[in-house]
Amino acid sequence: MSAALFDWLDRVTWLAEVPRYASAILTRQVQAKISRSRPECWSDNFAWLPAENGEERFLTAFANHYGRIRAFHGCRPADLKSYFDYGLHGQTAEILEAQFLSIFRDLPEQKLQEALAELKDRKESERGRFWVVLEERELIEHCGHYLIQGSEYLMALAASLCRLAPGEDYRMRLRKHGTPTIFELHIPIQHLQEAQVDALARLVLAAWGELVSNRPLGMGHSPCLVVRRTVEPQYFVGHTHPARIRDPHLGHTIYVNQHTRCVHCAEARIDT
Ligand SMILES: [Zn+2]
Image (tube, helix red, strand yellow):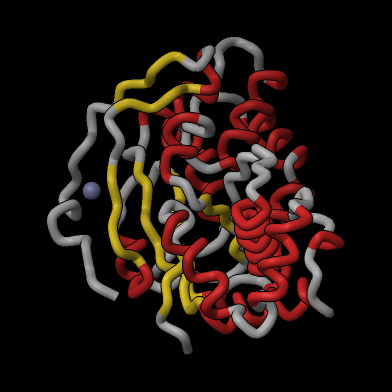
């Protein structure tokens, strides 16, 4: 397995690496052609790439070159220990439902069961999955609700309760439990579905094309990947508890997190 790490945040490096690992496709002639004709290098249509089967061959070259992807997962765990012991599992509805029943135990049991019934389909469609982003700041500035309130499924259950048993914004109760946490993961590329890796490779190829054609399209992609299997503890390389998080559920005001250290903070960093 290749040990090369793909770090979306290190754009200078990955752009420089493209013509090296894909030298058989992006030959000097191909580069010269793009540089001369200056096409618009989109990531969903590679008509601009003057190489036979260029897109397909590039996807293979990308997947062969990189062994791991640097990614960030935002959550609000009650205890981080299980992550370091067992890794990051996808959505496990039974655990979240137990938390839900405990946090809202003062509400009528019938309402809680109605909320669970409403989310039944989603429970199954999200089972075993979790989401990661390749830019840490996304979790702090644009989707802070995962740090502030935790699991998407738990939030959806609380939102259902707002309708079924009006009285308060039940999502706010989720803020009293757990610690806002961002885990940094170096996910083996084999842990990801091929379509996810291919989508990332297409963004990389298009960005390289924009550079060579000197024609920026200003697409501003910030990739988000779905992981459908457990990422084991050895792929955890660090974690943080951001102090200030933009709050999408309260008018994008700043949420101040008082828990910026945990017992695992000092010991968590491991070299991979
Ligand atoms: Zn910590």
